Image (cartoon, rainbow, N blue to C red; front, top):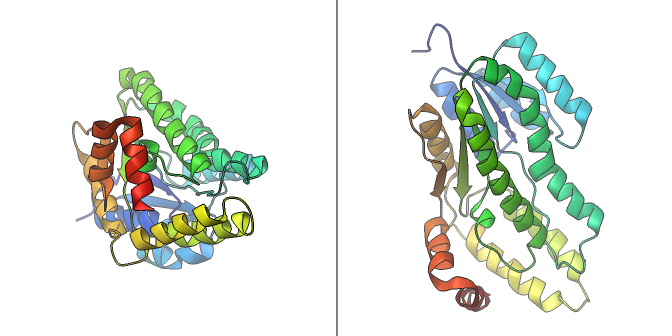
Length: 275
């Protein structure tokens, strides 16, 4: 049964995949759910299920301001932020224009930071709350053609670790979730630009191998369902003492274990063999 004073959660990137699945999980638990994304037309079913649907573009300050104002007016409180929105820019370092690299960081780091900053004063005043930052195993490891994506996720993890220490005295928990390969639009969105950028260039063969490996991992019925990550997020939020990091999903734990055990040269060898 929903509680008489439901807790409130904001989930970004809620139009599909992990974000949508997480919104549904929180709705099932009786939470007041604010679901935000650029593609609001893809969130009609969430709206019908009871979520408050909002437009959000993390690269636009006015969009963030409008979301903060709407949540303050509708709910007056925010207990949990699930920073799930993100993009993946793939291509050789030499071939990815720096404006695209900057956009990668604007969404995956600076947009998240700006949104979180806006809600922190109220969360501090309430002396509690949880911030869940959805990173990736890509924040702990690396692959060729993914320099800008991996750099943004490594940065998000370092930012989250510092934030956790700063907010601990105010009773605010910071949790990092590191999905492995999940059934989302990630692979489809990443592959086509990767191949286009490298077509006819010095990295064309490398790009084709990387695209094939990505298809094998994400599109050949191996990737985990988004519900797996959604369940972990809800579990972390409702835990009295959540872990600082949660790793889950296809290849997640084995890849991070290999990175730790093999070292740089060994992991480089493993990645090349996978391609």
